[in-house]
Image (cartoon, rainbow, N blue to C red; front, side):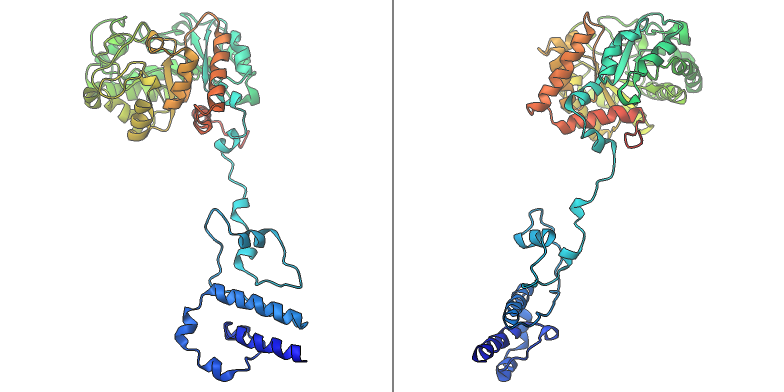
Length: 460
């Protein structure tokens, strides 16, 4: 009995710290309780009450009595990413019956960190191997007379094929259909070619011919351009070609054929920024209406370029000039819904020292950051002499292009396409493994390739 009294005396002191609704034993020293001022009670913290409740539980348990259950005021789950020891226990363990702990809202609420994330292409791609992601960012060159030559690369997951040639076979559509059947997961394939008009056409015998863009700009209205391009685009789509590396929206205006010293000339609609903007969007809309993906090129503008980058190092007009002359057609096209843009291999004085395809300033800072372009970014051919002159091999350039913000890399019809494709994929995979290329950047690039094809992995 003496032991019991001493326990009650101790308990009386403790219960003074508890809210009135939680006391099961009245304090024996009533006079002392009354001397506790209201201000003192208000300054006690919720943590002290919890500690008192726990101590009372232990004392009552020693006497064989049941401890009162309390819910401390203001007890909400912590927002800290590093939970305290007590919060971790409340989520993962159950307190023993002999030592009942206060019931808290944190313990009762479901743990939001365990919720299943919503399915997106990004969450699906995160489970892919680096090798498979790398292959999706590569466009493999192939002769349009024998597209089946790219079967091994397509089976390995290549994101696209680039058709080369001067005359397409009459059964190109069936050959491409057979090629697409080898795509892993039947996720589709970008089949692209350069069908600009004039002297830059690879399958005019099959889909019809267009005049040089410079001729269109002088003689056709935007409506006529859109209608003519739509007719050609419809035949391209029927032949299973779903991407055209056109229109050229460089502002050039020189009345010359494209050459080593002038990559544009007649490929440009005009030397007027307003005309190029107007006609470039009409051309883009004509392809889109035929379900062919247009690729506007060559950002940030080749008009007035010093040389053709396919044959050697080249630079554009100064950046300060491009901002007012060369950039507006791209800005307007982006606002009109341009799905894809090709970046040139020229350097831009006053902007960056690397060729545009390898420049994070050109792609990530200007094109994506300032112009808010969220579509597919393709490189120009990485077998261009302007690229090799910088000291990059094609595989090294592919890695740098992805680091810079490009989503898909292209190269020319080299002697051993299979070996080059393998080397590019290996370089990308190794760059991710050694930390030179963030895996998140590779995943985003792969996602852009799927997005322009309207592929939803969560429904496949």
